[in-house]
Length: 184
Ligand code: ADP
Image (cartoon, rainbow, N blue to C red; front, side, top):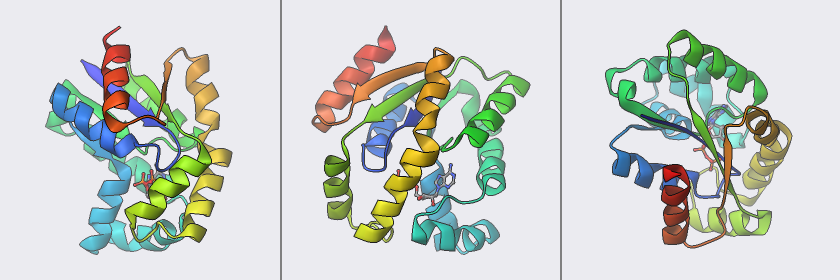
């Protein structure tokens, strides 16, 4: 049973690696960013509420993402494990998740801190060209990462759940290191 949380700055490669690993392990890859973008595309109530936050690089209010994560982790395919990508993004969300996993008996999660220096992630994001990948919005997302999300490194390290992987390597090298680390 594999339950993984991917942490790391935007552009570190969380989405790419989470997807590869999820396929390899045959478990769902749950990306809150992907779910929000899909909801925005379909203009669902969630998508309409999230739009202005996502477009400006701000965090969507906790309640919205927490509800969507609770719902998604309750689906049948999540009983065999999962990879969470983009959640939690701040300590309040981590505390919510901890309680949810305890309540639903889905513990034993490990946290992968995929790290990469700012200049590397900025270059990658600028070449990706998503709507929220403009220089100004990227700067804001990195600021939020440093202020709100990076404290989760200590949060999970204190709980002995953290492994750190160097994201400043080729995609293949990161995948290799990930598989190797998670097998041990
Ligand atoms: P990246 O990792 O490149 O920043 P994501 O796809 O993970 O991209 O997230 C895109 C946007 O979706 C974020 O900037 C934020 O607005 C919103 N979002 C995603 N996950 C969360 C979350 N857990 N809490 C609040 N907002 C979120």
